[in-house]
Length: 138
Image (cartoon, rainbow, N blue to C red; front, side, top):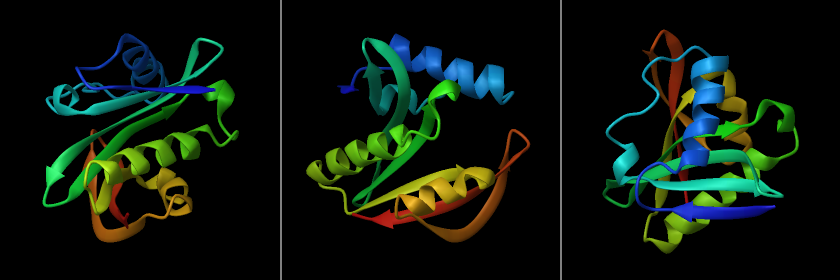
């Protein structure tokens, strides 16, 4: 496995994975937004094939926001999301962040808990999908 960090816009491989998972599989419509251009994007490759991605950006005040964590359906359960999250946490810390936040889909909150995140209590709907805000000190 190799992991690449991109800083200038959404790389094609990340965009393709996000379309496959969030648009085609989960039915989200507004997948790409204004945060993409200011985000750092990680893509994990297995033999040249993109298998996982995420993005994070500076929220200010020592906080980075992670999101759009996506793992190819055929590769889920292998720990790829957690490994990619470790890369993001390490990079965020190197950039001076002291915490990372996420607006997690409620049914994915267990994944974020296993990565050390805790819910803050705020729940909301995004495109009809229940989400919960979570935070992790780094």
